[in-house]
Amino acid sequence: MNVKVLSISGSKDGLSTPAKVKASKPTLPATASYLEVEGGVHAFFGDYGPQDGDGKPAISHEQARAQISAASVEFVNGLSG
Image (cartoon, rainbow, N blue to C red; front, side, top):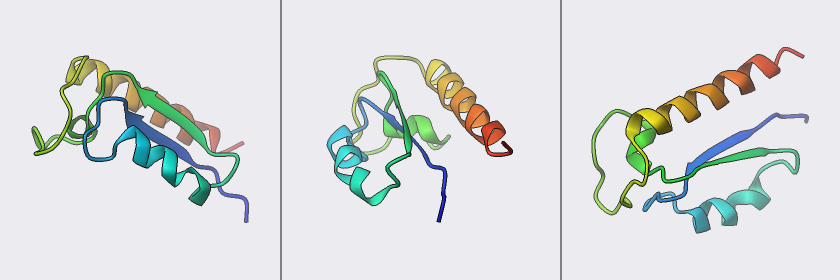
């Protein structure tokens, strides 16, 4: 099965930590793409506010959301080809 995968994570995420993301790589296709939002935290992947155990952000929510959105749109647009 040929599945395209994009994993987007935050470098300051205290819940889906960079170590957990790295540990999960063997479960994803070898062709998976990865984007780490430098300074991003878990709460930046939704609109539900701070999360217990999360890290301290090093960028604004708006900056992180712009990176997450742009990467997601680029990924989805690339699926048609």
